[in-house]
Amino acid sequence: MDQRTLERFADVIVGVGANVQPGQVVGIGSEPGKEPLTRALAASAYRHGAKFVDVTYFDPHVKRARIELSREEDLDYVPGWMGKRLLDLGKERGARIALSGPIEPTLFEGLDPARLGRDQLPYVPETMKLVNERLVNWCVAPSPSQPWASFVHRDLAPEAALAKLEQQLLHIMRLDETDPGAAWRERVAQIHAAASALNDRGFDAIRFHGPGTDLTVGLLASSHWMGGAMETAGGISHIANVPTEEVFTAPDPERVDGTVTATKPLVLGGTTIEGLRVRFEGGNAVEITADKGGEVLEAMTRRDAGATRLGEVALVDREGRIGPMDTVFYDTLLDENAASHVALGAAYAITVRDEADQARKNSSDIHIDFMIGSPEIDVDGLAADGTATPVLRDGRWQI
View 1 (tube, rainbow, N blue to C red):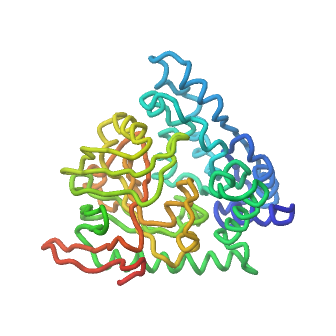
View 2 (view 1 turned 135 degrees about the vertical axis):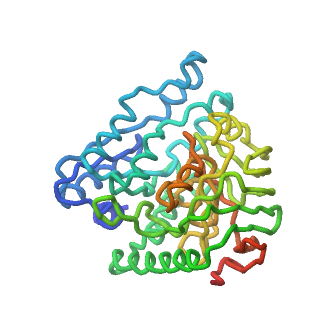
C-alpha cells in the first residue's frame, strides 16, 4: 500500500469511523507488525486536531509466554492499570481506535485450551463500560499485514496474497469510491432503515433455521435494534466498526433454545475454531463442540455465570461488501459483518430501553461473536403468539 493510499485508509478510520474531534485525547490499540497504519492513524488524528495520541502495542508473543509458562494461580491476574487506562480515557471523553487482523494467526496453536481460555487480553472488561455509558467515540478497523494475507490467501505467493488482501480491504472500506465518507453515510442510512423496520415490528423472538441450525432467540420487551452510526453521551456521531454491515440488539438471556452451527471459522485467542456447534436450553449453552479448537471457547464459557448465555443477536444482509467476496478472513470484525451472528457474554446496555430490562440483560466478562448466517439460513421474526414473519431470505431483507 503506497503512502497516499495508507493516509486515505487512516483518514477514513479517524475522520469517518472514530470521528476524532479537535482537542480530544486519542488512544490507539495496536500490535507489532501494524506500525505503518498505526503511525498513519496518529498523523491523521493530529491533522484532525487531537490533543494527544497515546499508542499501546500488545505483543501476542508475550501472551504466549504467559499462557505457556506462568503459574496456574496467576492466569486470571490483570493489572488494575490496564482497565484504569481505559476508564481515564472515558473521563477525558477521548476517542479510541483499535486495529484488528491477526498478525500471528497460528501462534497459540498447541497450547493448553483451558489455560488459553482464561486469558482474554488485550480485551479487558472495562471496555464494556466505555461502550455502554457512551463515554468515547470509537472505531475498530482492520490493518493489513503479510502474515494475515498469507493465512487468508494460502494459494498465493506472499506478495500476491498481500496485494489481494489490500485490494479487498480498500473495497470493503469504500476507499475505491471518490468520496468514501459519502459512501459510508449512504450505507449507514440503509442500516438505520433496517433497524427501524425491525423496531417497528416489535418481534418477540428471532428464529434462524437452515442446514445444521434451528435456533430461537427470545428478545426482551424493550430490546432496541441498532446499527451503523452511534452517538456518544456528548453527541459525537461515530461508526464503531469500519466496516459495519450489521443491525444488532440484546436478546433475552433466558429465552434461547435450539441448535446452531457456525457458518464461518472463529479466531479466538489466536486459535482457529472450525465446525463449531452449540446447543442451547433455557438460555444456556449446554453443549459446545467443534471439529477443531472448541475446547478454547468451552473454557472461556466457564469464566462466569453469564458466559454461557447470549448478549447479542445481529443480522446482516447481502448488500454489504464483505459477504459477496466469499472469503473467510479469520478476523471477527470482517467475518461478523459478512454474516448474521450471535455473541456469548455481555450485552450492550445501549440496546435495552427500559430499566426493568436493564436488570435482566446478560452480564459477563466476555463478549464472543460467532457467525451463524448464510444465504441458506432463513431468518424469521416471531410474534408473541408464534406467528412468523420472514425477515431474511437468501440474505435479502423481507421487511
